[in-house]
Image 1 (cartoon, one colour):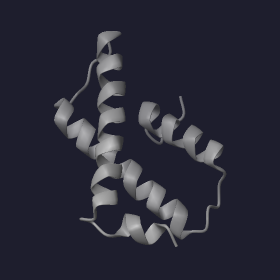
Image 2: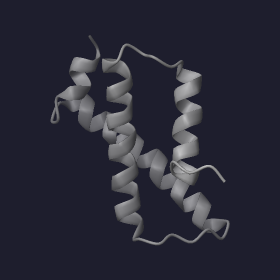
Image 3: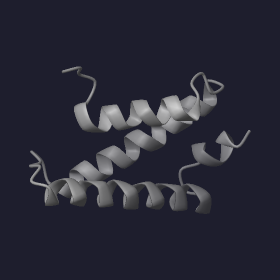
Image 4: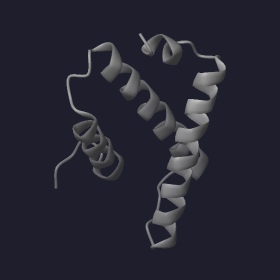
Length: 88
């Protein structure tokens, strides 16, 4: 039932959770840019998009009863963050 906390848009926990996601996405994006990666949209758009995507995916995962292990979810989230849904 911990997903109930995440589903509420304006609880202290949800705000903290999204702020933490925002921080990690921001740090990752800055590190990528420092290594020469170029982004095609402004960084604030990327950060907000990815933060929302991670939050909604975690909520979906919880609501579906954890159909994948945490390790699998982490690997898939990282792949999606780097390549999108495409396999190169």
